[in-house]
Image (cartoon, rainbow, N blue to C red; front, side, top):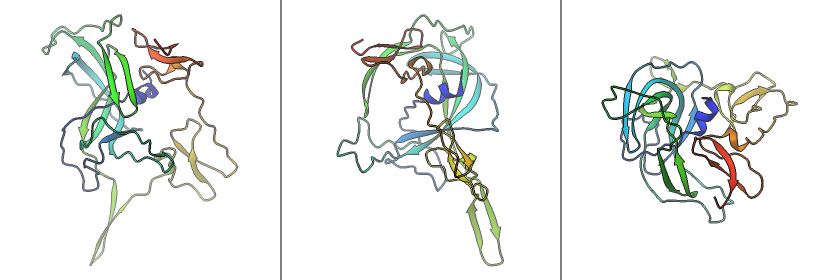
Length: 252
């Protein structure tokens, strides 16, 4: 399972969860979306057994690898949207931060999960219709879970300088490689500029003569389980019953 696949698979729905968050967190009903960023090294893999219970059944998760940090986010439409800014159908749900783990799991018959077993990839867990501000689509839900997202308290890294009269707290400046495209605003050495890297999602320091290669759109078969890759005209990238993606006619 690749990191890129996990990152694209992170679609998280959160309802009514409340946490104590830092004073700088945007925890209100305006920030009701989640924007997720990759967690870079170092991180700790977790080897713990937990049983999950939801409307699709029960699973035994036995290995968790941190992959994403999801932040409460307000979606603001650009100046040129001409009154067609997507909204609804759910409004004003305050959400906390989430830390999402790529997981390894087995199927369970019940909550006790005394006899875990391999997933039956020949069948879908469900076929559901999803309705959001960007449209409506009917999708198949695969067997094996990809991510487990847990509420998390995010603490900013700061440095503190104390004098005889005042205490000043300043945020540690980020290096270029710690920022993410398209807002590459980290620090570089003199004469270099922080620009997007060739993959289009990270940043690196480059000289003024360095050019940036725009990433090539992925083919349909490379984008499971989101299935948002490129297809020929008249075809749509859709999931098959095995959880893979393939190009089919739009009326499929």
